Each structure stands twice: as structure tokens, then as C-alpha cells.
Image 1 (spheres, rainbow, N blue to C red):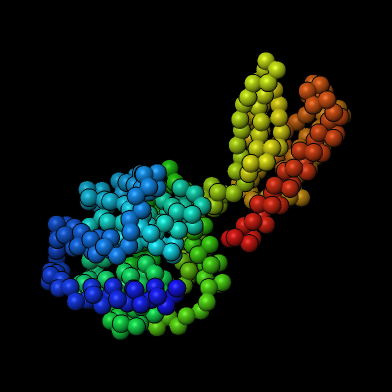
Image 2 (image 1 turned 30 degrees about the vertical axis):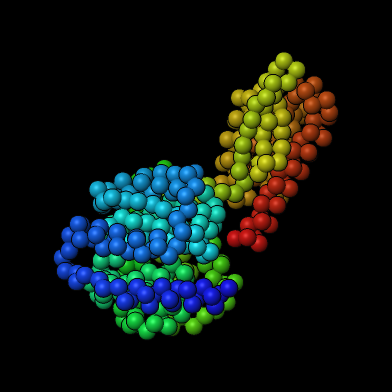
Length: 364
């Protein structure tokens, strides 16, 4: 399968290199850039199937347009599409044409992380990075780099022997860093957490450690993901943005629901789909969920969940936070000693935290 994919990609490159491309003036304006981008978009869509599922394209388009609106060039004809390719990745073309591969939609664990992917690509276009690449080389070379980036396989670039070390070094060191940091700045202006670009890079760094090592050839000076993690974390700290990973990485999800039971409203609280607590007071459940959210934002250890008895009441605590208090009026609803009820809540919370941590340990 890998060899067949490589032959296909190299075949695409050879065909592409035979297609004449217009000469590009260094000072080309938006119209020329959009025209070039449309040309590349046609080539890309001729080789990779565009995913037509409405919910998929709507999600990517909605998030992408929101970020494009806060970029330096909101007036571009921004289009966002998903293509059917086996690697999680994304690429941006000149003029506002952005493509995300289908596996990236599951690799990104939340809308926040998908926004981070799109913000990075939008930054490349808004800052005219592709046009700078073309200015430094030519359109054929840029197309080769684009395919090498999309497939995450440096052998493509070195195999066709089109990219000089200096050219790609310049691309990665100044333009890639610029897209990372500008993308972070875009996210600050949206409902999405800028920490998402850090959590995404941290997981990519973890994935790289488990990937087979390939001689990077002419891509060898591409900034290592660990390097990108370091400067993104430094930028978040410089901006005074708290590094809370939970919303971006989508872990320890708290949810509630209310249902009618015996002519009264019963509220239920869940963590990662596991029922933790039921009470006949929806407002109280909402308050407990809010306390759990604050506790989970700390990425706690299971052992931090405890129970404190104060006379005839029991407090379930998360570190220094009181998560909920059970008193004598609750005993009638539970029809069990409050010591057992609170111990059960403690046990369930510890279990879901442990399971969530284990999942993240193995899956990143």
C-alpha cells in the first residue's frame, strides 16, 4: 500500500511538472494570487476526492470562516474543504483555498483543536507565505513542497530533487514559525482557546516519537515539533494565557440531564458518560457540575478526590475544592447511609479520572 501510494504521488508530481505555469511577478496582487490558488485547487481536487458529507463540510467551513474573519485578509474568497487522504493533515493554497484531510477531523479532539489547525493554515495564506515560497523558487517547486507537506513524507521532496536545503530551510524556519504564532494570535480573537495549538503540537510530537524514522533529506531542517511546542508554550506564557488543556484536548467531559420521575424532576450528572450522581434538584446538579469543571481543569490525580465528614454532613472534595455536600435531608432520597453514598461518589470520580488518564497515556 505504501509503495503504491508513493508511486501515485510521484506520478502526480511528474504530471504536474509538465503542466506549464504562468510567470509570476514578485509584486503580484490578490487577483493573481487567487488565480494561482484556483489552479492549484483544481489540480488537488483532480487527484484527491473531496468529502461531500454536509455535516463534515459545514463544521470545517463554519470554524474556518470565523477565523478567516479575524485574519489580516478577510476579503479573500475563503473556501474550506475536506479531502479523502489517509494522513491527518491540512494544507493552504494561495488566495484562500484551505484543505483538511478527513483523518484530521478525528485527530483533532475538539472544535478548539480543529480551529488551531485551520488558524495555522489561514495564517500561511493571510501572510502570503505561499507567494513568498513561489517568489523564492517557482510554482513547480512549491507544488512539490505542498505535496510533501500534505503526505508528511520527505522522500517525495528529496526524490524529485527539486528543493535546495537553503530554500526549504528558509520556508520552515521563518514562515512556519510565523504561521504558528499568528495562528495563536487569531485564536485569541475567537471563542476557541489558543491553548489548542499547544495540545495539538504536543500530540503530534508524541506521534513523531512512535513513527518510523525516515531520512529527511532536504526536509531535514524542518523545525522539530518539540521546538514548536516550546515556543508556543512560551508565547502563551508571554501573553499571560493560562495553560489549561482540558477544553482543547476534550478530556473529563462533564454533562447533565434532567428527566421526569415519579412526578418530579430528577437531575443526573455524568463524567465521560458515566453516571456519578442523581438528585431531585436540577439547580444543585448544575452547581456541582460547575465545581467539577473547575477541579478537572487542574488535570487532577484520582487520589485528590476525598470525603470529609463534618458532624452529620459529608463533603466530597477535590483537593482544596468542595465539590458537593450531602446532609441529612438527602438521606431520604438516597435511602442509604450518607457515608455509603459519599464513598460511592468518591469511588466513581476516582475511577473516571483514572480511566481518562490511562486513555490519554496510550492515545496521546
